Image 1 (tube, one colour):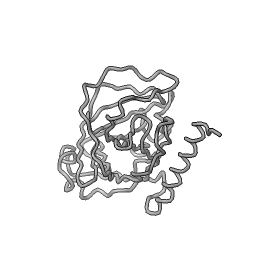
Image 2: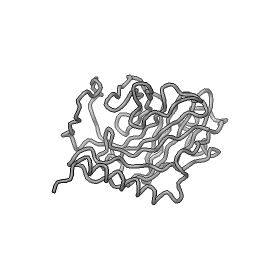
Image 3: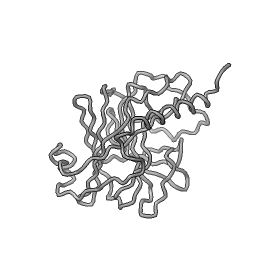
Image 4: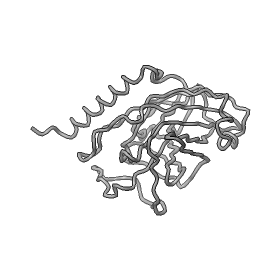
Length: 244
């Protein structure tokens, strides 16, 4: 008897969430606040000053979930990256977010210039044939209209009434700002943003410079592992966290 792809994906998601729950003994409960520290360091120092610039900013470990397979040829998703450590600092009208996670492989490739492609419009996504060009990446997502009364949009890239901004970095092309109003609507804005990334001894540290988002703003985190052929919606992700 052949089990449908939808059933396989649903079972895989339940297994992944179960693995995440089993790990969560030392991971704070989902939805806890992310403490924001008013830093005496400048945004430039936080971006490029190294660990010393962040020494007074506490980290919080945020658990990550794994998306189910997108295609029948995908392997069942192993939970290789089950958490990320997050630090948040406010300075000079900016919000700096440092995201650190362990990854045994450093996956980066050389690619041509980003093509000016329109948002995805196909009902059924077609699997890429370029299966040797996956790379590590990370992102911070928040509502396009942040504030104390901001509604936490769908984690699947928001929706038409609740769009989101995605500050996205990858190990090949660097930082780029994206906007989206739901699955399949991701749009490259053509804009970049200040970011800094390092990979040492099996660990990534990526620092994102965001606008000065107010307390209460929900933010979500995502990590892609190139060695697991992560791309698009195949990734690790957190639930919404809230800036304190």
